[in-house]
Image (cartoon, rainbow, N blue to C red; front, side, top):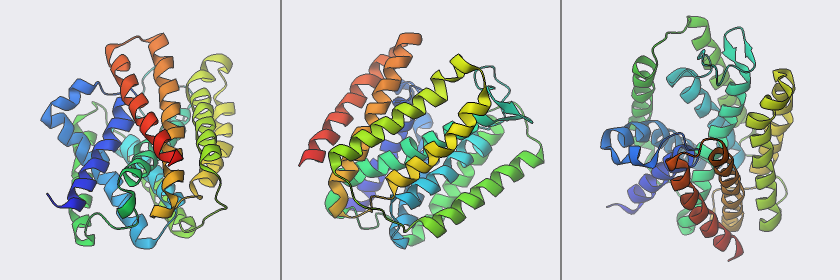
Length: 302
């Protein structure tokens, strides 16, 4: 197998594992079904590979990756699965004009950090010597675009039983364009480098705040305006943190620190879910998260 194809497949798989397994959204045994795995690969894999390829070509910092990750989150949750607009009791907190605004904001941030940024940082930590190199040919992007588009259409048509008004699709497309333009405008910016230890703590703190605002605070205050407003500084915080890394071997320890920080957040989320749901796949997700965190911690100190 071509060495870069192997790295790309590892990255695509890591995106699925971190986003779906560690969030307990998908039981690990569901991935043993080849069809389920290929569908998720078409969604997460195509997205994360495209974003990394674009960032490498344009020599962006991880800020560019984070911003494109926001676009990916809108594509998945707004256009594909349509949870932005789904009238379900568990996500309608902060529903405004048919949009689950609280959910839309925080799930988009989730995908940007845990579906895109963290898997890329982990893959580039594992393959640190090749972290600044493209892992797919530019010509292959057409295949990825087609795969992502096809998968999004399949999810849109068959994953949910309700249809959306055209205005909601227009809103999503406008937001996607805005985040892409922001990535082009801000993607190359880099801030002062911090120490790996401090960096990991900052990402852990960010993850904890995200968990509190996304899941805990809505059950306490019942005022969505507060969590929606607080999402703004949380987003700027993520922007500030992600601007400290670039895709090259020099930043390997900081990449490991990012992974260590966000996966510690995943562990806290899993523990909270275990306290409330106590489902088997939550128990199985915990050792996977711990292994990733321990690996990242070791690489952070090397």
